Length: 269
Image (cartoon, rainbow, N blue to C red; front, side):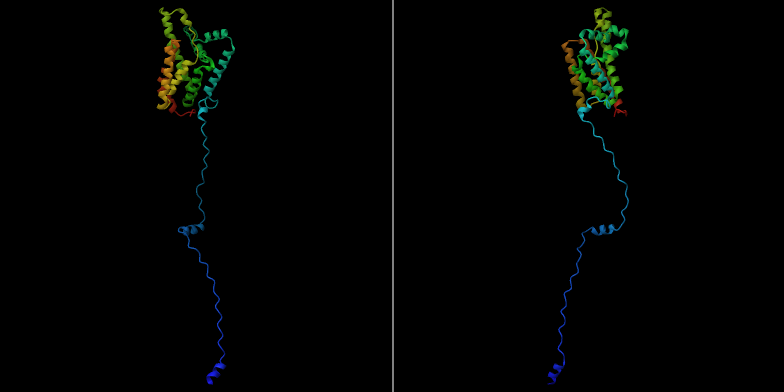
């Protein structure tokens, strides 16, 4: 009874409230290797480094075919000389053969004119292209003088041209004058018609070969020499053909000089 009474007097135990589940704290993902340093550096002020240097754009070289031709800015001397030759050739094509023969005769570097007005005829004879603009020497003149001027400068290129022109002319006309003097040739040989740019072109080609690499130098020199020898074998104009070979030899003899000019710094680079 006592036990029952105590049980009745004692209030029943209230159930404890169920503990509400606590949400799990979000666990940050482990940093990747090396990111700790990056996180630390984010708080460091950015250091000023040297300013980036902006280089000017490098001009692209002109296309190879265009560099083979004279231009007013790149090769003014060759361009001007080519323009003069074009004008004289056009003039010759529109004037009758009679007047032109007189003009050619007055410009001829024959023995008679060399004795009277050597400087005038040596310069005047180089203003005409034998055969006109369609002559192979016209194309050879443009290519050879343009290449020389780009390598050694305009004044020196013309000096090479004139050296071959003058020496080859004297080398062919002086023997003619001596042969007439001793009676081996008639007096009419003193007035042999001789004009054109071919001697200067041959000398320019010979000098240019010395400035090229071996893989191009020797084939070009052999081609020019074989062409001139073929003309000599044909025996159409042996005196002029000998002059072409002499002018080519003059150009090759100038190799040390033109190579020294090419190594010297100058505006032609």
